[in-house]
Length: 265
Length: 356
Ligand SMILES: Nc1ncnc2c1ncn2[C@@H]1O[C@H](COP(=O)(O)OP(=O)(O)OP(=O)(O)O)[C@@H](O)[C@H]1O
Ligand SMILES: [Mg+2]
Image (cartoon, rainbow over all chains, first blue to last red; front, side):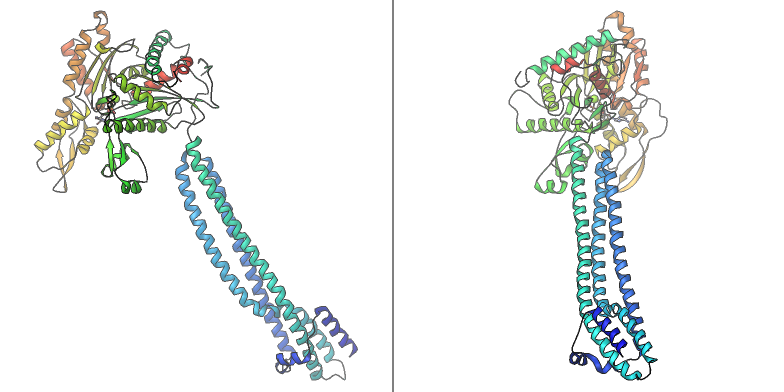
């Protein structure tokens, strides 16, 4: 019996929670007494399965967030391309605005999807802790199996006592798991919310950049001249003399015309 | 570009953009050294009231757009009859002021259409109708100044001829919307005696065609804009190369009409006054160079796109003046703008500087 107690003590110490027998009884000693090994194992299996499922939900959520991010980056890149196409800036801007609209819609959809996942998660939460107890339950099961072969210990008494202790562990685990779970949940939600905020910020930044691009159209959106310098008559021109004379005449006429009205002249 | 003279005046960071502009009654065209070529109908519209303004989301509309939305606009054709409508005698009424503003907005729009960069030096030559008054010219200059670094005016027929490198002894015939302008170029700027102008031009053809359709196609419904489109699609003189079959609504139902004869007669009103004008300008020219002048007749302006017009004028010249060679310029719509661009390019840097 010493080794059994020791093992349990170890298990209890590991799990670090204690509850009075009274409170345990209140919680369900009646049901516990009918739980057989098989039942425990099947419970464990179900819990593991559920826990796995719950974890999958998490992965999916990651995938959703990643996909959102990837999609957003894609849009961001296409917006950057857009900046390069200044000549088509108007058209491109409209396209980008459409994309932003789409992005915004997608973001909303993702938000909704996320909300749904979180709700599903809350449901899964109710059973999740059982999965987290799987480790301990497995250990206990091994101990029970070992004890069953020990002479002098009737299976029923051992089982009954074991179950009392298991329930002690379970309820303690339940509390800590719930706390941990809540913390984890908060962190995940936090992360997702942070990610969404980031997406929103990026969206705002992109919109701002687009506005700048649109403004650029007026500031420097023109098309460059082929000339870097003031030209003048080509010296090789066949009629350069005659043309010079004509240019002079046009200039003189304009000087006469413009001097008068020129402010400060 | 290596053979070009270098400017030594103050420069902006980047390049030098030259703009050639042809300021016309019906359209204003620009041709620029960045490869841009644009044309806009010389129409400016302002929303009639606050409601229209909200609806149009603009303070001013130009060209085709202004024409299309004309019902909610106060519409101006600020260059009607080839000259800025601006009395310039100091006693401008509200309407004249509004017209001047429309002209200035139009010039601004034409320059915007050339897509200048803010960091480039912009030099612009505007081909103005030869007969524009000094006050009109000042108004044009003032309007352009707001948008460019330096601007010069020159006479439109000169810029057309210069564009083809025909500097001397050229007779330029510019058939516009409001006016047909004949101008004899002999190397210097044209003077009064070098010019003949009359108002039998594109608009007159439209009016004539519309009158003839009215007379010969009972029940046909049309507007002057439709008639103009028909003329631009089919317009010809002389031999008809095809029948001009045009659908016009009768009682709301599109009905085909053969307008071949109507179109021919309407377009033919251009020929006689042109030949008369040529005669006058040739007869008063230095006898030694008359033959040369007769062989260097340039047809320009949108109206020159009437098919067969060059041959018809040439034929009449041969009959009445013994000889004649008429050439239609390649791009009638951009002839003036292209020539003005070339002048801008050839203008020495210090001339531009002095006018800044
Ligand atoms: N394909 C065409 N055939 C015949 N006429 C045409 C054609 N295309 C344009 N036109 C006519 O040319 C006229 C306009 O010519 P253009 O653009 O040279 O005039 P503008 O320079 O604005 O006028 P203006 O010289 O009187 O100031 C209009 O009457 C138009 O209907
Ligand atoms: Mg013209």
